Image 1 (cartoon, rainbow, N blue to C red):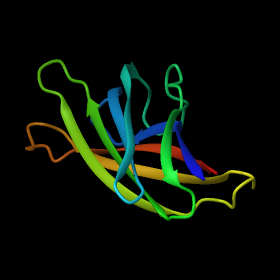
Image 2 (cartoon, rainbow, N blue to C red):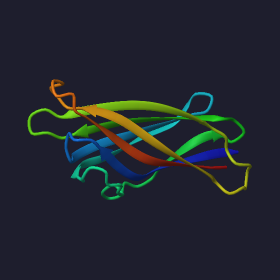
Image 3 (cartoon, rainbow, N blue to C red):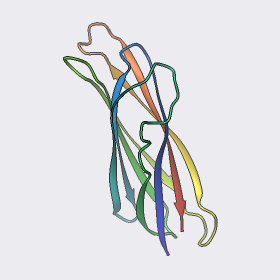
Image 4 (cartoon, helix red, strand yellow):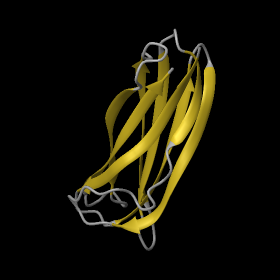
Length: 144
């Protein structure tokens, strides 16, 4: 049977002093005996205060992926690039994480995995040493 993975961004936050204007993109790749599907969601520049957990603007639509045979374990690779937008030079952080997941039995309720992805973003130039942590809560929903 063919599996399906849905990736949704639930919320965003940042902690640290480097700024309140952010943009980012999240790429997802689904592997099941090779690359099955991939996609990217982009969230445009928007402002939000430090230490506030909020839904991203829009919010962006969930990404749905074909995932191959439900009988196999899959790998979902998530890459997050967060940018604190400045007047002269933007500050960027990027991270990639892999999750290995099993599908529910055919006909069973979908399984849900919530994942917190965090990336450090350092103020440029690096003389001040100020850093913020940008985080997304992402939901992976697997169905067969």
